[in-house]
Image 1 (cartoon, one colour):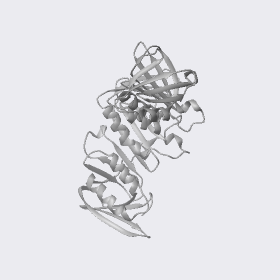
Image 2 (cartoon, rainbow, N blue to C red):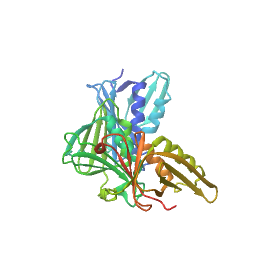
Image 3 (cartoon, rainbow, N blue to C red):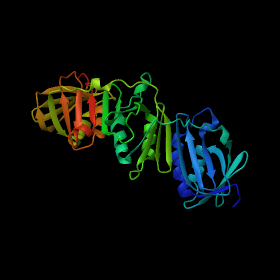
Image 4 (cartoon, rainbow, N blue to C red):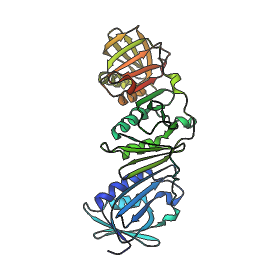
Length: 373
């Protein structure tokens, strides 16, 4: 092996590239941002791969053989595709020169243009005010529960992420103004005094890619950045610079009419009546009365549909209210548990929806704004 050659297994390199490439800005006008940084630590026998789009940075390390330290960048998509098309079980050799790197396995050889490591931007490693650990499974559940409610509206950019804040609990909240989702968990040791932050949507997506259920996640937070480390993978991201609105004001506390229904039966019924709906904004009328919930959809161009399911527990007066059917299915898909409790007031008031199971202080809640039907 030449001193400047890196030797490593395809089975280790390919998934590492597939992960890091998710942080690469593929359409950037800055050529080096379309590249991955490869950094060799010969004494440790590791190759570290880094991708960035200037807002977030994703890196991972894997074992390799190398004769000396080295660092350079290669086009992310081209390198990934070249490695992906090499034979299973192949041993891959990467040898970098001044302007090109040779990537080879067996008789297959690729000569790929190199850009210098000095041109690759590094995200600031400013001090983090808080450091704590979260269970990977709990973090995944938290993000999955609320991420569907993240807004995509550019004008209210401060809603384009998940809001974290801490009191005696850690709260994760997302809203787009039409629906709100909140997940509450015990505040981990080290989180006390953490600044309230907003984690961007893209970062939320990347966090889900790096989690391993059996490995705790180290979380570090400052006013402007968050860093998550899981095993050999590290994700650093800028935070949204804005103030999340006081979401507590829209969570109803006095709704007196409560109806508990089977979630799976509700999902199937809503999906059925939406067969005649058109577009994302089609309304479904929910008629809660006695032991029966009646669902109705009307489309002037296609017809109408209705269905009924049983109400397991009813308390209060009958209520008729309209909801966006697509929003309902998104919300029901994010809510764990077998049954959902709807707490309603009038047809024009926000509805509080909670899974029936679990500790009331440590489970999700959802708020859904009504539609006129």
